[in-house]
Structure formats: structure tokens, C-alpha cells
Image 1 (cartoon, rainbow, N blue to C red):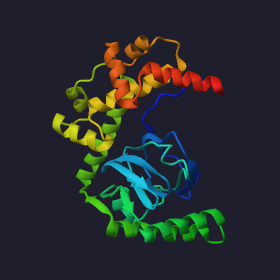
Image 2: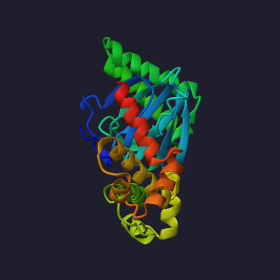
Image 3: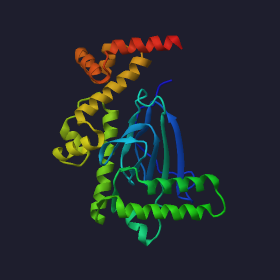
Image 4: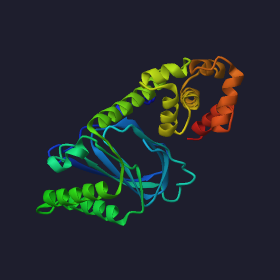
Length: 294
């Protein structure tokens, strides 16, 4: 079965929209991508309990470890890289996700949060208050004793107030907030465009135009979000696609290289080795040997 191509997604529907809060507990993730590139209207908190991973967000490329809390702003494009299974083989990756929708944040005093006038930091390290508050919300959500909705709202409002006092990265005017949201949307469009058109050349000026930014500003923004230059990022997209084709296609290595954007087979092999530390032929052989053993 052919795997789905990665694409930019918007996640904006919670299972219980009337409550306006949703909690997910994920455990023992040992390999593979954690989140694809996406964005959503709700605020999202991710409490890491075990393991480590890399998160890409407006503050750049961040290493997340057990005890850290990731905070994703409304409208912010973000994703998490594949987990290094060798480094996480003993414990895997465990984390708790808390989602708070704009519907929940109603009222005059919370309107600046809804309108994204506050941009919060993305990585919070070892904050006992936030961690305990998230666990209180999780316990109320799980047990659902009498008054649990009121208790959750009380804890969540205390959590938002705590963020506003201690973890505001930027405080924006209404116009600046609108422009920030637009920049995030435009950068998401760039990532989606690159994934859909990875086999063609992508001049820097074209990508900057899609992002509605100058070339110099685009280069800084792109490196901050992905951890790579646009050229390096495109190279890795092509190698990622080549991996799938080497596993699923009967095409020759030269044909696969050409299909993902490498007109020179030697350059394809060098690029593949640079990213994955092995040649395309070795990768295909290892995959075939592993498949035959199963």
C-alpha cells in the first residue's frame, strides 16, 4: 500500500467542542514521526514525561526532553521530527497533550489570548506549577466526578493567567498580531509547496515571494522554523521521498534519483550518503534483506 505524502494540515476540531478542552496521553512511541507539519486555532500544551524529540516552531529547532513543556500558539506552524529509536529504546517517548480551544477562552479578560496579542514561548523547562496544573486537569478529565467541568475550567484559567505572567515571548498590537498570523500561514504554504514540487528547482526569490517576505527575511525565518536552509530542506525532502521509492518501487536507482529531482546520478548518491550515511544501493539491499526475514 502506498504511503501518504506529507502535507500541511490544519487540526481544528476537538471531540467535544462544547467543553472546549481535549486531552490525549500517548505512550511508548519508539520510532517514526511524532507530528506532521500542521497548525490549529487552539492553544496546545505538550508535557513530555519520557524520552526526547526535536520540535520545530516559531522559536526555532528545539530539543524536548522529559520534564519539558511545549507550548504551541494558535495559528503556529509546527511539527516534530522522527524519534531516534536507538536513544529512546529503553523508555520510548511519553507525553500528555492538552488542547484549549478559542471557544473555551471566552470573556473580556481572555480576548487578548484569543486574538493572539500574546505570543508565548515554545519551550518551558521544569516548571512544577504548570506540570502539576496539567496533571490536575488530566485527572479531572479522566475521573469526571461531579463538577469536573467547573474544576477543569478553574485549573485552565489559572494556567493561562500563569502563562501571561511568566511566559510571554512577544506582546503584539492588533495589527502586528494579524501580520504574525499571516506570516505563519504563508510559511506553511511554502512548506506545502516544497513538498508538492520537490522535483523541480526552487529559486530563493520564488519561495520568498510565496512567503510574502524579502529574501533575507525569508532565509532567517525558514532556518528558524526548520533548522535548515531552504536548499538543505529541499535536499532532505528529496532523500525522504527517495527512501520511500527505494522501498516501494521497482525503478532503478537512477530513475528514482531523477524522479525526486536529481538529474545527475552521482550527485544523488553523494546526497543520499550525506543524509543517511549509506548509498541508495546499500539502503535498498538492507531493506530487501529485512523484508525477506519477516
